[in-house]
Image 1: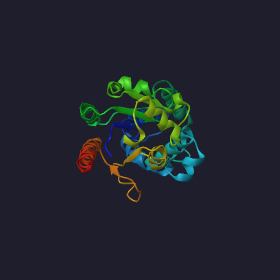
Image 2: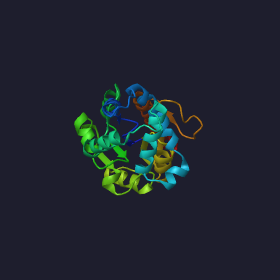
Image 3: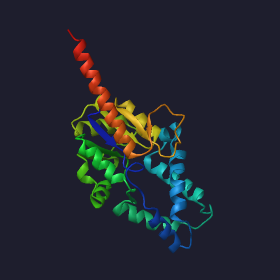
Image 4: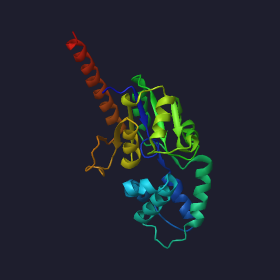
Length: 244
């Protein structure tokens, strides 16, 4: 079916933690971990918390804490390292500015390409109430007609109500809305429960065994959306030709 509205998750798709800031903050507290080590550990931390049981029985904030613990350990931070001071400093920054503020190279150009196609774009993110600040700071907000932040909406993915709010606010239809996120049990399961199409952003091939179409880059996503719309229009035209 053609795509008339494209919804993107924010964290893990368009924006990522500022690993340089995390590394510098840890260093001020006597703990040394490189930005590259954190960046390499990041997808594995997210994948580890993305299980059906964890998503069903924890909040996004709970999973965020688990993600950080797993990422730090995988990046080489000793389990007994005195990290609480660094965490307090990072939390204060996150509360005011949002730590997910890094836009990877090429992401902006891919979003511009998607927007230039005329396809309405929306953001559907489990966040802390200030995700709009990041999008304003990075200049990305102008590409999106709707930005839904779970803290603001009072409901978070995978609850179908979150997706229903997003679709209604964007004046879309569930069946022609495609949501793309980085967590299967949060983004894909939630979107499907609300009747949306769903796709997984999986640059590291961690979800090969899952029953969902995956893309590795935003450029690949743009190509897939173009293909889906082409096939959708062909289906419509073929139906019209067969109708007496």
